[in-house]
Length: 444
Image 1 (tube, helix red, strand yellow):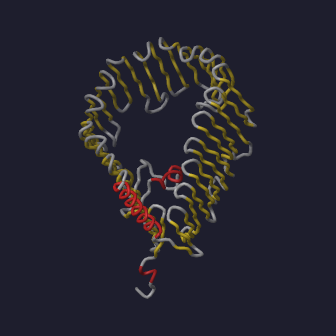
Image 2 (cartoon, helix red, strand yellow; image 1 turned 135 degrees about the vertical axis):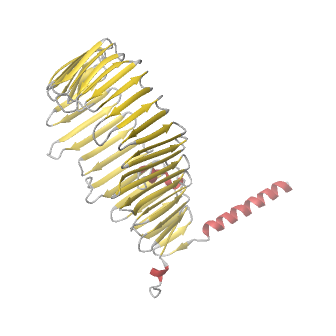
Image 3 (tube, helix red, strand yellow; image 1 turned 90 degrees about the vertical axis):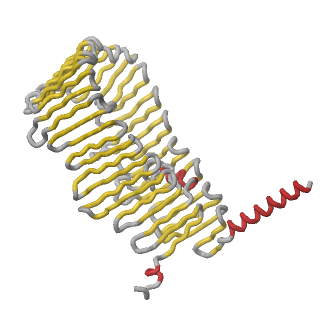
């Protein structure tokens, strides 16, 4: 009994101390009410907005001249936004268990989008010239839509139907797929039987026949001719016909393959593991050896140099590009672009990522990430931001994952604007302060 009494007393003391900590910053003014994570309401100076929360981070509202948002994390998020000059115009959006469900209505080209991954997709798209296109998919069986220019379509997979604008084709028709299908792209039309085994196409300067994997050919007037026998073992590919750079390639896989151009050649042995390439184009002469790919690659030329002993060490240099790695993918360094805009990236995976851009040698913008502990960003003449924790592997501070989930892991945030205004946030508590110079104009 004494032990139980002592445990209860210790628990009450612990609860009291925590409640005291939660409420020690409590205050209520016309602009601000702070009751810890249970309730707060505050006005924000930048951007000018108000935010409120009950049982943070679950229930939260945000209101600004441009954005109105209500969130019940992580279940759903409702947002209205005036994107101004953005193509979307006014936007209304509902997200639920993101990224599973999305409802978005805008004034832009994509007027309506509804998505329930991975089975349902609905979209209304307004073309610049006026007509509206509708597409609805209930995967994997039903696909339907309508366009004023092309008419409607409907498909019940795999039994039959018509599709428009899928897989880069103007029209696809099928019946008891894969038994029969035909497609059209411009003036070219293709017929498929027992796809992918038998195909025939013609029109628009192109033609082809395939009885896969035994034999097939494909041509395009004045551009290419391709033939295969017993795919993928024997093939001949002729590209860029009737130009000053025709290419002729033969493949006898896996033993030997070769490619010949007016400027050089490539020979493969046990393709793709061993190869030798030589280019004699003026101003870009080089030779390259792979033995075997991808483990050893060596390049020497006028504009290119490479030593790669993957995954241990490698370096690849061009006039506007440099790539180094050490124990790939642990360490990697990239440098690319021109002096007017030069980008540098460094990775020590998975812990450290560094990315920065310079214009004419002057710093422009950059980001450092110590995954999953923090990230830091800076733009010249604009705001700086530091956050901890930062477990996401991509950077979209205003993105949907941040909006729906970041409050569950973001312990601390710091922002500073060029005029010296600072914002700090620890868990739910946010406050702003001015730089000393701004707070006291007499200090110069």
